[in-house]
Image (cartoon, helix red, strand yellow):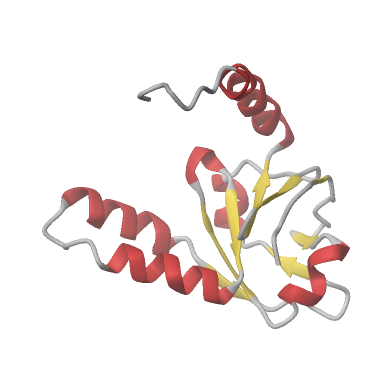
Length: 141
């Protein structure tokens, strides 16, 4: 299953998030929530998380960048099983990292979901829309 789309659920008073209904069956057995880049959170199906973890493990621990990535990737991670209503709890440290309050934006990004603070998502989109419009496969960047 591919994850696509933009959704605007709300966190409840206990820091729980309703997963988008169209993805609940796919994620019913559990997910891994980690810190993402650009201060978002990433919701991984376990098999996708395992592939990413394996890829990270292939880099030598003598690499400072590899150690840093692994520390950030795993230290904030949490394995979560959705409840019967399709909610997952987002631990307080992860909510703080992503500056999540009541309103959030959940986006599908092919093999995972990302959870964003709405203001940060808008700012990210505004900065990226020009780059996206100007993409040219002949560019070297």
